[in-house]
Length: 296
Image 1 (spheres, helix red, strand yellow):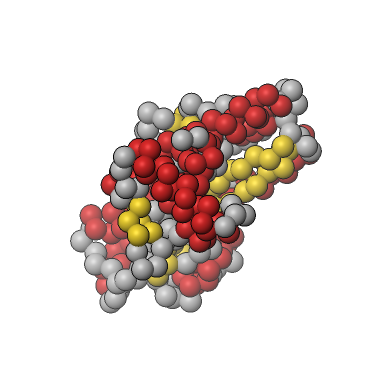
Image 2 (spheres, one colour):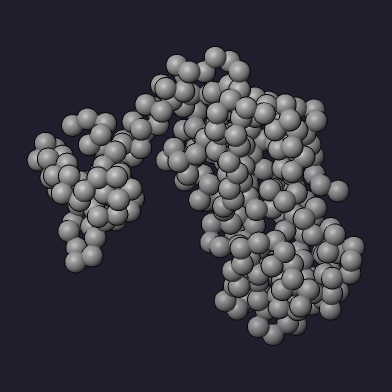
């Protein structure tokens, strides 16, 4: 068993198909099948259940899956450490919440790019649950997530606080009117979004029943549907401020305990901190970035 065998195993597990793994690894399916068979013989257990279409991990396969990912990351960190001369460069993969990308990051990313032109930032978005999983499984370097985050394998840096508000159509004048809405509908990001979870908890505590949530992938789409009277949502005040000033939506302040949401920058505590990662962490916690400051 070597790192190459484990790389093949991880690809098959992730893609659910030996044929797709072979295409990704630029080899033939027979090579992938042989490596998996030899790995199973060496370990003395079956790693995949062969199905009519593709494969599925067995319990043993699921137990060992984290190790190939960690080994791959360790090898990558070894190369990065050897080539890191202290000058931030190379690619840095960061994921973030959709709201954080829209509200907080444009300025800091522009400043970082000007200061460190040799670093190529790759920024993608996701939900808090998916972002935490991606960092834990070494699929990316770091992520901005809704806190608090408490995990033994993660380093988390509180960056700022958001003030959350309930966003409704203009026709809703107060929170008391929510109970009068027939077929109350929420407009949210996909499952795993912390704001969605908080909204559902907020409504449940008040005994309000909701229809099937409408899942959308962007802030503009959510605000557009709210303005059209489709439903309600829970979002950072800074994100909806422009739509509120333009008279397209109404916002309703919540009790302080329910309105405060901390955003944290997380990374695995056992991985190599490159010069680029170190520079980025400093840039988002510097005096020039709104650390732990709520949006106005």
